Image (cartoon, rainbow, N blue to C red):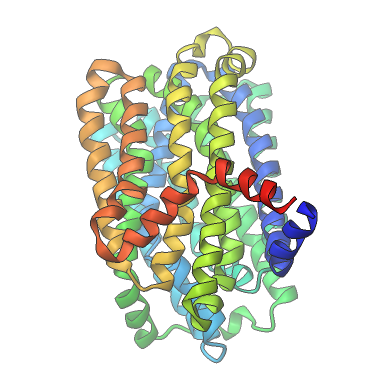
Length: 443
């Protein structure tokens, strides 16, 4: 009876679950290879040099926000809904992302010259890592496959890029390479992923890249819809990555190295909600067009699943943190365990935020994305500024946890339109009690 109930509930979602498994499979493989590479690289470089590398990668991620343009979900939505305009949507969004990423890279180099000095080790790390931004516009091909729930092609491209980057990092460790060379793995990964995405698009899509075309009118239309999401994405990147940059400013690179190990182990899990929600997004769009009842029923199921998975991850990692750090990274990174125990609990809010971000797009509540992300960014910067001088990496971890909770959960209560979603999230926190009770009643 119980098995039958579960099957009846989730049978209509099989296609989307399979797509999620492809995305998660790619992320699991990537996570495994990144973990292996991080262990060897962190041990080889030591906390101080590893902190310098992590600082450069965090800066590159911050400036990559310039190329987001608020287009991700909008492109997927437009591909699903507007068949005749797909070539124009892809061409226009690719050009917009190229302009944004190019601008971001120029500003990044300017920062590196002004604050780190031309010719310094940090300058070369930032310049090399940031070069990966120039290949990010081809992510629009990923959006195409998301729209058609065909994650297997993207998964193969991403896994191949992970393999290439990991092999390069391990080769550099074996060769005893200098610090600057380790940033090249970021560029190699971006190049391999971009080339393979283009190849699969050529083989599997009816459109050709030569059919893509840029349109000023479509650009204005996309930017008019996406500028709020764009600002929200900038704020999101700030409160995701500013902690390591501020640790570099307010503490030292060794503290960044300790924090970076913990943050990487914690943030590695964020692919799970992204994979699940990316697969369900096209279906949610169609359900909302059909009516509210089933749409919000499925949304509640999604919140339930995301909360329970996030809770399991947080509990397991809290218990295993000291063992993981000691076994894989050694005594030099002992402080990372305490940071990880705090940082990992932010996953609960990040997991549910993934579904809420798609609700924002579907309900066209884009300004609320900017508001919540902006509040999270402001809270994170202020809390980091206050807590890092006193508590170092531990303070940065608490700042991350509080700012994520504020932006992704509590802020929803204070706006009438999102209050219903707040209560859905709150109801999801009872899922570990609700579901066993429901199953017991069906026996």
